[in-house]
Image 1: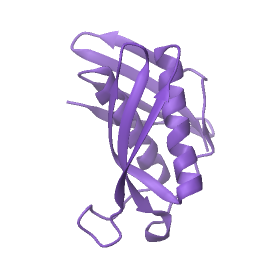
Image 2: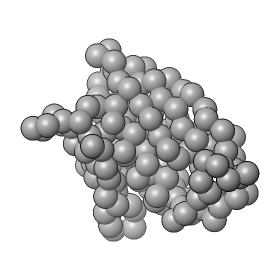
Image 3: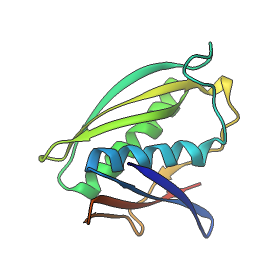
Length: 139
């Protein structure tokens, strides 16, 4: 089972996540990103619940794949005006991330700005029973 924990980090916010596979771990970090931006959002069944969107990123390492995936979610927020929630992801051996999210309109929530994902202290590692990741976001 995947999950995340928000961690205080000086003026920034960090997400520590784990999952049974790399995709579940990436999706848990993305859910942590959403939680860092917003405390609450409409359910999928709500009229403002948003639609599903797909994305794909290709990278050269697990850390780069996670960075590029999260950076793309921030880009989607900025360009499409949505909060990416209910994240799902799979990661292929070549560090290709195929993902989807439910885009809740920013007009339906009160969101805090997360400016960027950083490589500062980023960690992606295999552990007994799955994967763990740690990511710091610039706020």
